[in-house]
Image (cartoon, rainbow, N blue to C red; front, side, top):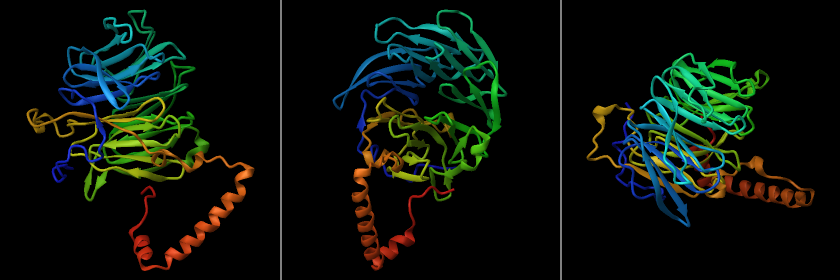
Length: 381
């Protein structure tokens, strides 16, 4: 089994900004407000906490409690309200900005694993281990619709009108939310082991899927685009294989981040099939992560992720941290973002010629020959 025991004890090897005070137990989800730099974290100590990120500082803003561990969170599109769900089988709606009290707006017969607010429908969607997906008008006590799932809900992603639900037994159920009561397509995951996370493409043409096997699948919905599908390995160290716990698209450049139980996060470009930036491994797993609304902040939690069970958890020694990283443009910028204007063609041609001149010169050197033998950061398939 993969282990982090060989890592150095540096709790913050990437020199990220740490949010204080630390949560009292492992973090299960992170969600930024779509309208501001308010960050919400849910955790296994039954808490939902909110911090305001201002000028490089974090200020605790408020918190609420559930009766049991909290597993998921989502914001309303206007940035006023937070939804949270978990092991108490309910979803709470918290009018955070107005200072109101939370109220229960959704119920299931088993823990609630995933939630999403869909502003185009003015509905809340919740997925549970009771094998149902439920749509809620938060003004009503009963769900608008209950959709049976083939198995327990493990992951969910929405980019209207596209929604994908990942369940046990590697089912991926695709919905067109313009017709939400009917499955659009059901497919078997392209990955061989349990689904851990999902992220819909920004253009709604497909999705990313991550699994416990240290691999990510890039999958298109349209059958005519199947030739563009591929999978790649990540979050592996020698013979150790770690779970991919989180997938997040950058809201501006549409590159994406992966975070895993190896304690690392990486930035990737699916279109060029390149890893843009690899970061140093933290001493504990990263169970969840999130970009803020403009992509200038990447938040990630470092804590025990329960992948080795309760018997391997030592609350006295374990520390839970939430860090904020400010991505460099080069680490999230895709080459496909470059817009070529006619007035720039001369400079581009000159730059390419100069680049080839430098490459020619460098490739003659012994040092460059050694670097070429070492390989590159292209995505390993």
